[in-house]
Image (cartoon, rainbow, N blue to C red; front, side, top):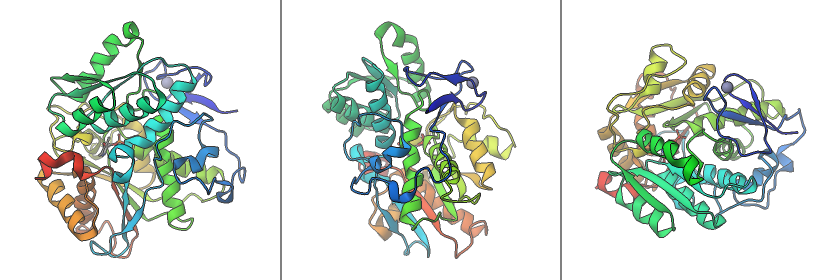
Length: 374
Ligand SMILES: *Cc1c(COP(=O)(O)O)cnc(C)c1O
Ligand SMILES: [Zn+2]
């Protein structure tokens, strides 16, 4: 039987009910209790061209789907031999937030949520708006008032109730927390329910399949709230339980913006939990997350895989996003640009070796960031 328990303290929670976080305030982990060879790569649903090909590895539900996942792994040999771009910009609503929201909305619907809310720097709001429309559940999205215009127009078109907040994503989250009980909203904030991370973990399974049942040496990921990094680390642990891989792991690299780098700071200071980052500012809106309840999970994954964490400035991200676009044909977002800037720095430092296989995650499309990229 699948179970839910706290990622930090281990306290169990009932998977038959709508769940938020553990009593200790930290995220809940969904666990299928996988045994060796219980599922093999052959058992996947190979006729389904979306992340639902991994349905056997996901919580059981009736999918609310727009065709998310199954994104291309694009050779980026004009950037570097053996470098690849996992292009998440081709997902519904143009970012990998679609993966998480497909699962989270499917499960919220199954477990009886009547209205859904999310604080967002942009992409999560777009994705929730789309999946809530598909599920015909009302959506309430809260974004900082300086969020790029494209996100606001998109969410309103998708029928969501949009509220702009003077402040950061953390202020948007506080506004939802204050009102959700009275309004009857179910809060889909990053890691404040157990299933967005289940959707994001499918990136790890896809990378494994796309490298013909192997994993790359290094994964470079632009980390905000951390669901993608945490999800992939969880996927690799599951793959080891299933006997698909051994103890080896790609070295996980978290890139953050120089103007908002709580995880980089905690990594450098040898801490397991991150301090809130003051005066967070960056054009990479997905990285403007000054405080994350999954901080320790990111830091554990980076350290366990002998990875690292580093920053890129806004200027470096924009320049690298354009370089990625012009050299590979992938119109990257600034967050995607950050992965290229980071990989180049790490190569210069000798931390990435010239022959190593590296996957850069372009987490969204450049189309939503025209003001920053113009
Ligand atoms: C949300 C977001 C991120 C950060 O993702 P997490 O998995 O929450 O760390 C990175 N890039 C883009 C484009 C995003 O929208
Ligand atoms: Zn707990």
